[in-house]
Length: 433
Image 1 (cartoon, helix red, strand yellow):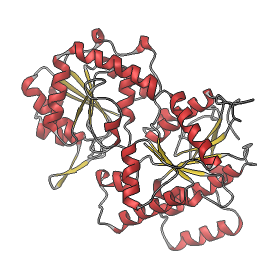
Image 2 (cartoon, helix red, strand yellow):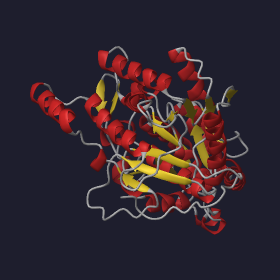
Image 3 (cartoon, helix red, strand yellow):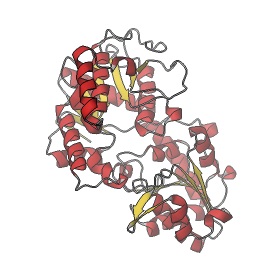
Image 4 (cartoon, helix red, strand yellow):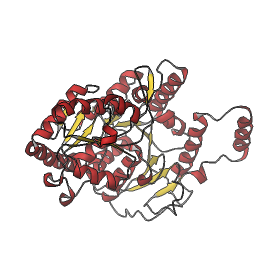
């Protein structure tokens, strides 16, 4: 059943009827999963409710040990994703002769989404629109077949993110996944992307016009002014990095940049927050401790580098408040929620101009940009922030204001709803970047 009540009676904020919106997310709740899609769904749903709409959070699964879901509009798809009748017999027969494939999992999710979208199960109404990620071609498995208009949200197309996550672009598996995602995007009624860069690259990769498409940023939960970063509470020389130790997030780049920073600022300290899936570089596989020990012998032992692994959102927030600079070193991002989270908190920020991340703020107005995969440039930008706390603090204050105007949940939800209404009326043409 649907958890909680989601209200939405009478007209919505824009004067039109409230929309029943399905938002797919791979799992729930956000506190248990470090996943940008889940964070996006939670934030945009909050904004949609604020505007008088009815978002339903269609989760592929719930975290183990979670009690009954209490998030308004949350739906666990598992009970309605199972095959029935002849479909169940066919799945059982197939399982006897071949191992499970990614397709089998995505087909199960799609089955649950189609049933949820049509309404009449688990207390759901028929949905007006269904938004799903592009992963593994999911939109193509859902579109049509009695489903409402399907919107593909380009959270991280594999042709962009795969190579930085260790996938071999020359492999058949890579080609199959990229092709499936292209087919799913093409089958969608419309497409949204968190950045103009990702939308442009997707059009070019697949040769698709995507006439009904728009770049709409991800929302970020705002931080009340009284809880934002304060210079008097920050530790001088303290640098914070939040992200995985992999090529995608630039875990090696921040360590290399920090090694250079120490030459000019030997009192600096780096706190690295995030998991260590390992990183391929220089012909071998590195763990974070191995890489840090090679680049900075003794730094993990003497405290110049602290690796904290995964931390809760509340713990990350507290760490941001104690850091004099927050750094994002990604090689590519469709958006980079770690950037907007730091901005919302008013933190002095250095980020790489990596794909969509380069669209999030104005250089020297809200923070400092460096180029991807450039430890020298990154170290120089960090040093500049640490050397001028007054200017760093002023950029952080302006960044928080920029988030309120551009990335607040209600602001992004309003842009999204306008796009949905154009799609539903058949007027969502043009290249809106």
